[in-house]
Image (tube, rainbow, N blue to C red; front, side):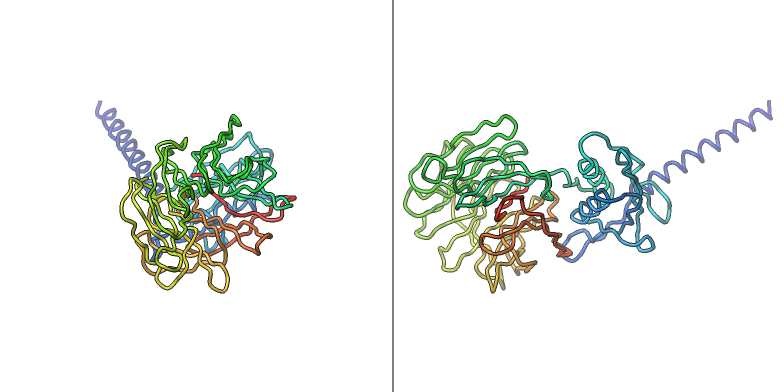
Amino acid sequence: MKHTRTISRLLGGAIWLAALTTAFAADTVIKLVREYDDLGFLKPIPVSVSGFTGEADATLKTDLLFMGIVNVPADQAKYLVNGSNNGRVEGQVIEKINKQFVLPRRAYEGSTLRGQIHALADDIALALTGKAGIAKTKIAFKAETGGGNSEIYIADYDGFNPQTVTRDHTIVAAPCWAGRSALYYASYKLGPCNIFYHNLTGGERRQVTRTSGSNMSPSVSPDGKRLAMILSKSGSPDLYVSDLDGTNLKQLTVTREAESSPCWSPDNQTICYVSRERGAASLFTVSASGGAARRIPTTGVPNATEPDWSPDGKWIAFTTQMREFQICLVKAGGGDALVLTPGEDPTWAPNSRAIIFCKGQDHAKNLSLLDVPTKQVKTVARISGSQSNSQPSWSK
């Protein structure tokens, strides 16, 4: 009996030790150390990617770069990303020093090779950064097709797998996402410039605005309930807001100068736009329910245009023209502006880290991706047959 009790104690101790070891291992996996720069952006997390070949290897490294994860030699890495793409994509992430799994080995099937790699990249990003990945998101943009005409396209965030949305054979502009399955944009298809809605799943298309003058620059609120736009029905282009179908229209600005480029705050309460009401082009905000406008200072950078509010609410990216167009950044409340890189038409990724923008001459523009904290840029291939790609919008 005494011997039996001794064995029981030993077994109990072993079970307790195993449980403690498991808990410690789990705790080690969960508590990742993440470092941030002076602006509050996550510092690039160094990983060493191995086992992948060709397009899979290049795609994975690009995906990770714009989610705050950089590929480095193994001796400089904190994490090891191992995998393969033989028939299907498989991958895992291991903390190099403690040999703990941050992401246990997973297999990805179906879709295309790029689709499988995008899925793996998003899983790696979530595991290492704590933020959802962006590799499977989409962009919409304008492509000039010749003869003064343009069409709206959608593509993967990196420009691959482009699909034509419109076949208007006229001037179209300013695509804006409404969720992930619909777009708003402006078109001269029926004569004057009007705003249209297009459902990407069923193909339904309808005209939203029917007022006199130009109707342009649609911008859907993050909650998908309201539409901001610029209408010139009263003579000067002013900022308006309405329901998604164009009803319950409310005028928010009344100025002699032209307003342009509305975008929404993440909480759906405020609209940022551009006005020359006080001279040079400047950023202003106004409540979506109406009220007095407030100028946003962009100290050190004049002529602010084309704003886009980051999904986390902290930043507004915008364009300025100095010797050339530049992408800039300012805190949402205003302050000293930062010049990031040559380009125009910035729009944020859902992770509030990457930006897609365009650069180049008037009718020969390319889309490019920017990692904001490191200022690394990668040019996106132009759509075959198009002369220029511009006015990007990133699905959230």
